[in-house]
Structures are given as structure tokens and as C-alpha cells.
Length: 472
Ligand code: GLN
Image (cartoon, rainbow, N blue to C red; front, side):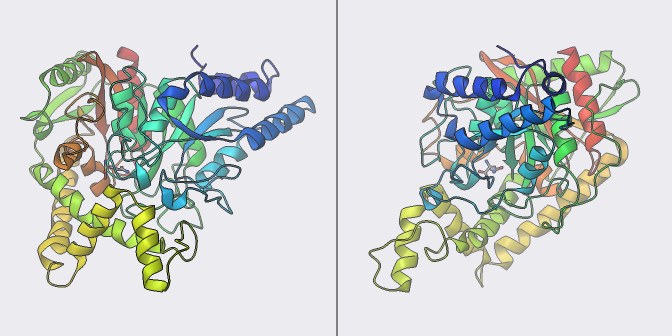
């Protein structure tokens, strides 16, 4: 059964038509029915029900709750939350209970939303398929033999499985948009800094963002509206738009939409390309001006990303030293041995690969050849996007060059796995908002259409995405 829109659910809870408790129990029973997908790692049995009952009581007493009254949601298991462990899908944090909650979760709760469960991800969000989870892969809701994408695969699968109306994801190089595209749902990556990263397990701090995964663009906008804005605990946060983010469709007449040439050249699945071009035709029919644009450095973006991100990963993961919190090997005889044994046991192979690559590209002698060069490419990419956004309002292309691949297909071929991110990493390196919306089917699997806009144009991006969604 489909969930109503988030707006309608909150209205129904607020008017007493349905209770928050009923909704939370509905999420719990779907979690139970869909266990074999392995989308969920832990359930907030106690706290979610307590909060639901409290909300229902307050409504009975005539209190106003908020714009998300009683709306259940799922948080990726790298958000710090009360009541459940926060594992980042790693043995390193397997038994870690956070002493405080992520700002995003706090803000959603303040408006009445209820976190019911935590979802599976690639360990520490390193991956594109959820196969790097220490707790087994999530299966794709449309075809169980396929991956759901990653790293927020559990969150995207949860929304596709209708466990809750929305889920939270993190996107460092595509981890919201790629699984949204593979599972046939909406995934929104806001402008860098628009949503606080406080209380979220850090991957690469210069590209990490938090965003919603939903069934509709309007729902994504409502969730963003609640989460966004400055946070004193995250110095990179920026002021939000003073108007609400409502995701209301806008006319495409006169909108200048750039089709990125590099995203439609070789390497893209033919069927995926056709779905995207059909969508572009529809935009044209609705009055959009379609302009072909070129961003030459896109061809370097994946290489650039896989130097800079491991560098930041190696630094961010150094805090897991077996001493302060997380896994600590009890057999170690001295401090060095404790570091070694705890890190060897706690991290997955992909985490270790990134720590090694990151340490290498930052080491003296190789810094100039790799890290510095990648930073120069990043600046070049930023400049090229800026130049293109002088000509067009939005950019369009596929979210990924392929549809969901088979479980196990790419686990031994890292390059192939990394190639799934080739169309998403640029938005992270440049810091611009980007959204993936369902665009049609290819190879019997969903295809995601990716739209991008200049920094801080999140509102317009959501509006144009809502228009295209309506036409599909
Ligand atoms: N798949 C990309 C990676 O492995 C993106 C991960 C993410 O956005 N968290 O780095």
C-alpha cells in the first residue's frame, strides 16, 4: 500500500483522522514483512512508540505538533540517533550508542517526524552497491538478484518497499542519487552546506551532504524545508532560503536546460540513453529551451574524486583507533598493537583500500603528483560548471550510465564499481544541488534522470524536477 503524501499524513495525524501510533506500527509491520531485503539494520521499537503516543496525546489535548506530525522515517545508519546503535554498517561501531542525535534528526523530530529504524549502507558509506556493508547486502526491491545501489541502498530500498514515506541518506559522491535511481525513487542532494552534517559519521568532509529519499519531489522539498539552514555545530552550514521549499511544479516555458554532452557519449547503456533523450524531448515539448553543453573536465572528475575523497577518508577514519570509542582489541599488548589489531578487525576491505590510497596521495613526495593535482582539477571543474551556468539554468543527464547491476557482479572489480559514480561525483566536487527522479524503465529496471542547478538554486531545482515528474 502506498503512503499518502507527507503533507496529507501530517494533516491526518494533526486532525486525529489517524494516530501516529498506527503509522509507526504500520512501518514496523512492513519492516517485518520485508526482512529478506536486508534494508533495515535496527528498529527504534521503544522510543518511536513512546514518541508516537506522546504526539497522539498532545494532539488530543489540542496542541499543534508541526509540519511532519507523526510521519515515520528511516535514517541511514551513519546518522547518530538515540535508542538504536549507529554502526555505519561497520564492525568498528557495531555496538556504538550515540550520546546525542544528528542535527537533521533533531530538526525533523521537532516538527513531529518519528524515526522508526536505521538502514543498511556500504560500510562508512564507501561504495555504490551496499555490498560493502559488514552486515550483508541489501537487495533491490524491484529485482532481488540486483543491487539497490549505494551507499544509501537501505534507505532507497526502504522507500521503494514502502516501509516509511521518507528516508535520510548521505551523498559524498552520489550515495543518495545512485540508489534512488536504481530503486525507482526520488533522491535529492542539496547544495553543500545547506543541511548540517553535525552528528553524521564523516566520510569526506568537503563533499558530504545530507538529503532526503522520497517517493515524490514534493515530499523531498518538505523534508529539506525542515532540515536546512545554519547550525552552530557545523561551521560549513549556510543560511537557507527564507521562503519554504515546497516542490511545486513550475512552467518549463523559457527554462534553459543544458544537456551535458559528456554524459551521453560512450560508456552509457543504450536503453538508459534512450529513456533520458525521451525525457529531454518531453521537456522541449513543454517549452524548455534545450541547449547542448560541454564540460570537458567531467572526463577527469572520477579520477579527481577517487584521489580527494580517499585523502579525506584516511584523515576522518584515523579517529577509530581502538582507544576512544568503537571496537577495541582486548588481546593487544601495547598501544601500537591495539591500533593495528582494532583497525584490522574493525574496517572492511574497501575502508582499508581508501585509507591506503588516501595516505599515499597525501604523503610527502606524492602529494604534489596526486593530491595537489586533483585539487587543481577540482577548481577547473568548478570554473567550467560556473561558465556553463551563465548559459543555462539547469543541467540534465542520466544519474548513472547503467541500471542496477547483479549482486556480486562488480565486487572483485573496483574500477567497474567506481564507474557507477561517473555521473554523480561532479555535483559533489562542485558543491551544487542535484536530484535524481524516476524517468522510465530500461532492462526492466528503473532509470534515474539527474538534474543539476547552480549553488543555492535548490528551490528552483526542486520545482523543475516536480514539473518533469508530473509529466512522467
Ligand atoms: N559511491 C561513491 C563512493 O564510493 C559515493 C559514496 C557516497 O556518496 N557516500 O565513494
